[in-house]
Amino acid sequence: MNKELVFKALSSNTRLEIVEFLSSGPASVSQIATALKITQPSISVNLLELYRAEIVDLIVIGRDHFYRLSPEYLEETVTWLDRLLHSSEQRKATVDQDTTIYDLHFARTCYDHLAGVKGVEILDKMLERRFLKFQQDGKQLFLTDEGRAKMIMLGIEIPMRTNSRRKFAYGCNDWTVRRNHLGGALGSAVLKYLEKQGYIARIPGSREVRIFKDPVELFD
Image 1 (cartoon, rainbow, N blue to C red):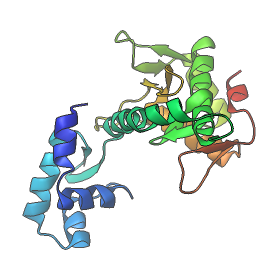
Image 2 (cartoon, one colour):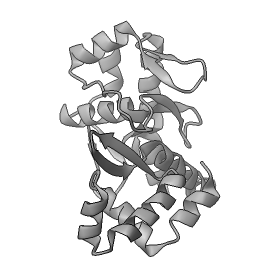
Image 3 (cartoon, rainbow, N blue to C red):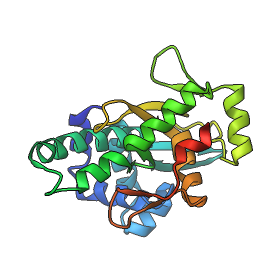
């Protein structure tokens, strides 16, 4: 993550409005311009700045061009800000004074996937069972045949490869556990599945996640 480019790109009110609009899903230049009541040329110029900072991603479907928020780079930004914001809190907090930090450490969302102890344990289990293996770069992951069969058996939707920049699966560094949890499109699919099946629930207005059943057992 190039922090200088990211924060420079986000220093514009117009670009912040675009980012907020894209948080609800992908959109074309004309859709963004209509919604924000800004000319298309101006939207295009600002989208280019966001694209250069890797905050947005371009998806081409036939003749149509859509922009969306780029998850991996937002994940990196969120993780970096988490470390920055919570490092002093962790030094000051005691068990009696603050349980929030412990709860975030146990289970929370990192952009659109599960983080904290439970997120790390899921990745550990998937690697142990050889459902996932690291690629040569030591960070990106791929599903093995056994892993693909397990996803199908559980009913977890396996993300399709697209022409966007989003990684399929990778080890996202966890700021509390100091190890990797499962990030990328597959991590997002797993989180959606766990919510749908009632294993977890997000707490409104927070990144904290409530655990009802241990999701790690699914991958035994």
